[in-house]
Image (cartoon, rainbow, N blue to C red; front, side, top):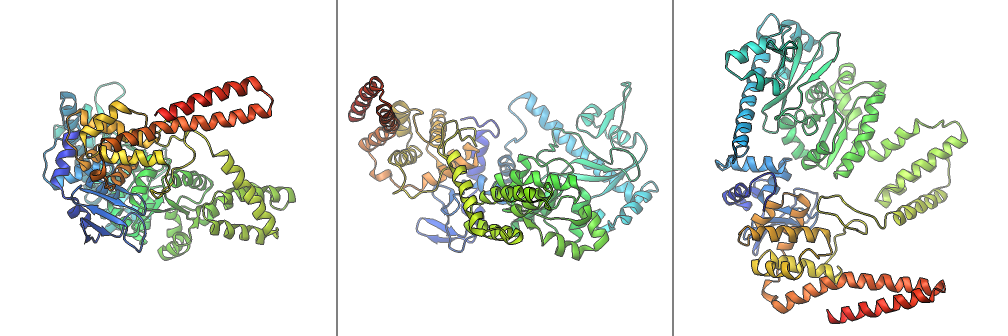
Length: 611
């Protein structure tokens, strides 16, 4: 089975090198209960343990939040890493030479070597800029500028701040002397080619330099700030094989331990905001470095924390960006608050004017929930002194409040709204409930495609249900997949008899992966199979399937019963639709149509009896 990213043999080697009990035990206090271990889930708040680890299958699963998978997925989720980063981390810890980033082809080997050379060059440039800032005459003005901005020597050292001198070739000469390939250095964003093609010049000149580091703490890019007038004020390294702006968060490597401990992250716009806030005691802050927040950023944030406080600039542009960040973060599963900074100031300016303690107390700790911020944000678009405009705002506010899932929250905000405008609470709630009913009616059907493997019709979001309450076809699909994960012969039999005819999109995806897994000669191994999925939702589903203990009670007859139940469901759906259609035809007096539908119903009933 090909996953398109990490080779299967690498995943296999990493899984064999680590025992999930030892890895999980570093983060969760586990107690033995029969054949498995139990503890409090690290991915959501709970008082009663619902998080289990099964040593025999090398998987974990939480009955509370549904998180699950094998050891690689656990490390990815708990450390806020991508799947590939988690594989690399575990491989390094086990001293495995698995050739990640290196190669089966000459081209891949070349890319791996170039990445390593670029990382080495960035590390050299980082040291050079810091040396120039602290130890040369050229760096004195930059150091004085930083200290004037409230950046102490300790902060400069903590964040590796440096200075790129105004000369055109300081870094070029050093890289050339150290025999770094200059064309590669240009591709990596450290230097630029001269327009006449006669050589290279430094990319950054006369700028305070902020190293941008990856999750390991390796320098992969720079942000440079002018100290005087000129444009652009901030200049970031261009995209390269090391640096991807849409996925990189400034200061993530240093703030991760505190983020993981607090399960909360503070999101800023720029370097200076992060640095000054760090000095103020906000050590769980990261920044998007002036670029717009992306879905990739939001996913990375959610892997780290449940709660996010957005502390963007207080001007119109900053507040607009904060508003736009809310759906991205909430769609990723984050609880969002917005810090409102008065006077149009940014965090750096607020701390400079009012001090660290006041910034934490009056800005960060008083951040408002996203719904309240939306109400404030929209309010400025209405002329509240006019009755008509005020009513339009109330209608808009009720539409926003109606989207809240918690009845208590809805009641709270409706009371606030009606109290402020002396509006009838009962009337407001009636309007809100009408909005909710209409929204629910509009969303009952539609094509739900949140995942690449989801390509069918779906009646709303999937709900967690107990086995006794789920439909018979869904129960049959889960039971069948559970056996298929344990038995290659059963999987091959199901592939011949059923193929991709599973009714649940996710179940069809798991089946397809199982067919491919066994086709490549792999033996039944839940941890190995789950590791190859590289999709967190599918991994959680597959891990829950491994907990179904039905192998001893399953024989060929039971397997055939499951297959029949699965195949029967589409026929039952067709039958139900035909019966509705015949009722409509009879009401409209369309006798020919009713007779035709009656014939089709008889044919479907015969198919069901013979199946």
